[in-house]
Image 1 (cartoon, rainbow, N blue to C red):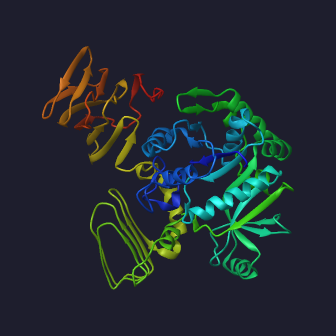
Image 2: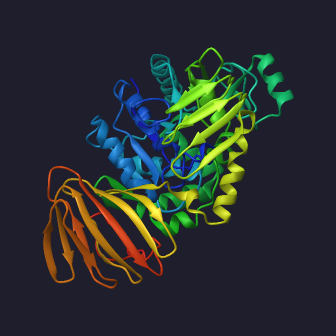
Length: 470
């Protein structure tokens, strides 16, 4: 049996699933279809592969702690590695980095490349397809996983099947007329974005067709640094690397492309409509999630995160409510949500990047009230965790403990605070918050000052390797 090394691509922002998916908490980290996030579901899937190595996960620097936390929560792997991308450069450099990092093992090893944000309903068929693909990969093929179409679909790229297992051509996302033609032809598959190939074959093909990417990522790995579970790719090498997808950089150019066609119950959850399609629906075609009441409503997706969402007389509509945003659109135009995200980014709105609850390596904070000169937060510090030793130039902070025990460094003083006790941190004072207990520390923080941005932090010491953000 071929040796299989899973590589999970966990970058990206999932902009078409806004307002649930945000830049700093993207769709692969969300529980969209069950009790596990999409990343966790992918990790569970590869844990079932016979004889597979522990996975290598490729992720953006800004998502490293929550990614590690979600993997550790599963308790499935003891020796996985997280490759950290200091800048995003699309899928070809990410896969190159993984191949270079794994190059120290037997180069006949088969890399199984999987996006972290897909749904695969039929696990046994997935395992069967992977084992078939591994055999082809060992024979020198660059194997793609083609999904048998269930409908004309304009949101996916297509693979035209050639003689035997070979790929005849790759097709861009088609218009409706062409998608119907592909569907009726019967010789086309959806391009799933999952691949298998040996390290040896992949490196040779990349050096042949995309040598600049191959050279840049070889340098990024060679000059990278180990940090516990993390491996940090060297930043300047990645910055100099061309940004390209694996499809353009290699698959459409190699003569060794093969396709495994399978019915996996697959979806890339690329839009709210795609999510609507994978859920079971009521008798009126609705998917209603959370605190909802619906009357005379048909073929809608309604998701409530905090408040009650009620509808009357709605049809073919998307409604998504979060603590700080509400999205309403025709379900058929769910792809256009990315236009809203583009505007949010251009206008530098916080709703582009974060929710009201923001996760940190030590826990999380939730913004309860936000005004021009004051801000109120609920802070949760995990047992045994501590914030960085830091100061702020422009804001004063008042802390009130509501649960647990806090150790506070405030200038030259070190004090213990218990429930219903408080302290005050003047601007410019070095301070640190720590939870020495075995239960979460909960406190209310009131910030007052002329500038309350998260970038007003000068870090002197940090247990998580974060650099000074001032």
